[in-house]
Structures are given as structure tokens and as C-alpha cells.
Length: 280
Ligand SMILES: O=C(O)CCC(=O)C(=O)O
Ligand SMILES: [Fe+2]
View 1: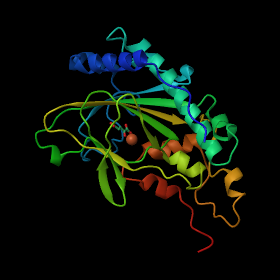
View 2: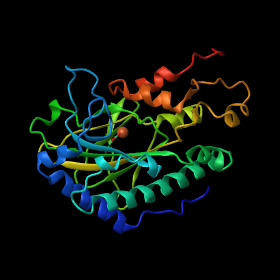
View 3: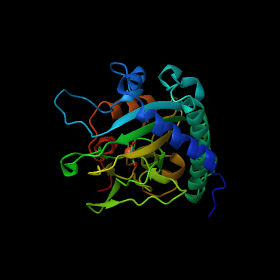
């Protein structure tokens, strides 16, 4: 097995953490300068709001596309604190290298060439969701982030302060994820499940809220480039005799539209991409 030889320098991680903490502490009217525009995903606000009467997640977030650099909407990148843009830029580049290197290694471990997935990630999309989950005295009555799986290949999650809240679902039960100092939590996303025809499963997760303390996190989502077609890799499926193609093949752009148009609900998005079995 190949080892990963990329890491994110400590000062890049610390710079990101400090800038984000300062951003969230700004007065509401300053943060609103970077607010999401009507019908858009990017900016400061909420995601997956699809109806007037749905219960919102107990969190503030700042969602930005960061890679490839030409798609950045710099106007929505906070210029306060003054360190923010440079910190996010450095963080984004460093984390993308780690994700690309992980993807290449995972390809190899599947018996594929390193490039099979990596080639789709040249000019690949990276979006970054920075989350603040305020404390809630009735923490059991709210959810910080509704149960979902990520619609990407791999997500690298950085826990910014000491407060835990991320949970994963296994065999029907929720388990807390204890962050390891100096390490990322890596979530397998839906596109990785589709590409590998289910050899890797995306992980259902949610965030619970602490009754007393706020929690901050940074999730960096990595996806193929927007021109890529997403479907089970023929290199894998053709190799295995009689293996069903388990997921539909769709254009990446279409897949993203479908994902953001519905409320987060466990792995329901991926369920809709599944094809009926032909062998059973
Ligand atoms: O806050 C976290 O730890 C996870 C965030 C997350 O799952 C997401 O933004 O999709
Ligand atoms: Fe997530």
C-alpha cells in the first residue's frame, strides 16, 4: 500500500483557524456584506433551504468555491479580517494536494492506475464550507447539520476548536467522531461510491450541537472537474464478471444541480442515482 506523502503545514492550518474564528466574531452587519445572494449557494448564510416552512439547521456557514482558482467569486471572500483571503487561499491549495494524493493512492489500492480518478480531478472542483454551530440550551431539540452524505469524492474536515459534534452512522446507530490532533477527518462522498460502483460507500453523517459551547469546523469538498461524466468506472466494472452497473451515469453539472435542489436527508440523494439490479 502506498503512503501519502503530502501534508498541510501547521502554520497554514493555524492561519485558517485564526482567520475563521475572527471572521465569525465580526458584527452581523459586517458578515452580511458577504451574504449569499438570492438563489445562490456561495457566501455567508445557509445551504439546502428549499421551502419556507422547513426547520433550519442550527448553524451559520460560509460556503465558497476555492478551486480551480478562476471560479472564485472574490467579492464573497471576506476581506475582514485582513488575513482571511490569503489564509483561505493557502489552505485551499494545500488541502487539495492532500486530497489529490489520497485519491491517487485509493485508485492504486483498487488495482487501477493512479491517474484514473486523478485525471478527472485536473481542474477539479473544491468548495469549502466553514461552519459555526452556536451552543443551544436545548441542544437535543435542534440539529447542527442534518444527516447527509457529501456529494463529492472526498471531504477533508478540520475541527477548528475543541468542541466535538460530528457523528457518523454505522449499522443504524450514530457514533461520535473524535478528532485526532493534527489530522483531518476524511469522509468518502457519493461520487466516490458511484465511481467505484459501491466498493467504497459514502458515509452518512450529521452534526449535533453542544449545550454550552460553540463549535467551528472547515469542510473541504473535492470533486472531479465540471466537464467530467460521473458513473461507475468501466475499468472496474468490466473487470468483474457479471457485476451489475449499480449507479446511473450523469454529467457532473447535472448531478450537482440535483444534489443542491433537495433538503439533506441521509443518503437519499445517492439512492436516487441507483439503478435496479439486473441479476436478482
Ligand atoms: O462540521 C463538521 O464536522 C462536518 C461538516 C459537514 O459534514 C459538511 O459541511 O458537509
Ligand atoms: Fe458533510
